[in-house]
Image 1 (cartoon, rainbow, N blue to C red):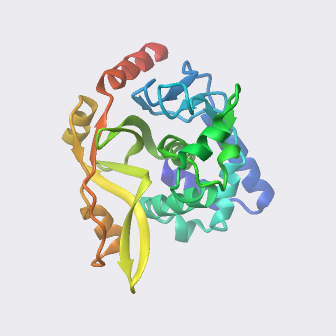
Image 2 (image 1 turned 30 degrees about the horizontal axis):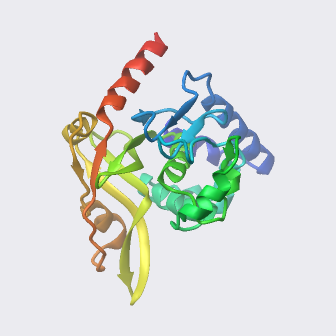
Length: 268
């Protein structure tokens, strides 16, 4: 199901029960018996599927923050209710969908505090951590935020992948998706919004940057992608002043290639 098909089908629904049934069926169609049991920083290079509730997500390879479960399946209904199911306004285009996803992620996790001591306290146990344990606590980091974004994008029908690589040489998780019917990619970093000023007040918009097919292949092969602010200016912040931060994204190219090979083998 594509993004356009999702919107078309959802708009036909007449009441809350029909919407709830549609959401549940959509989730079940995305959940598969995947060969992956754990993904994350230091473990995998890229993941292109829906992340099932039984999979573990690691924020690093040290063993700390090592096993989060995206087991809150109510998040999809919560997401649709967040903007009152108003698809024509809030999901009218792919950029609008990204914007409402960014706002929802802030609503669900809180803003990007990621306090290490608070995170360690939540993860200090000998069992997997539920994503519900991070809700409203301002402690979710890049891997948790990007993992939930990946599932929301898959739910809506986007062709997206979750990349476990680096930002400015520090381990980092982010999203790449391919707009429907177009021949380029979008890098979307849910952890790092773009700060701008409008009417003497700070505002924040999704960190998105256009990536060519060649740049995408270079990134897969270990090259560096330099974040370009042209797209976020055009889509969201217009001529308002903004904060420029140099962002250099890389992938874990060895694990990236290994994931591709293993996925192709699994599908045979």
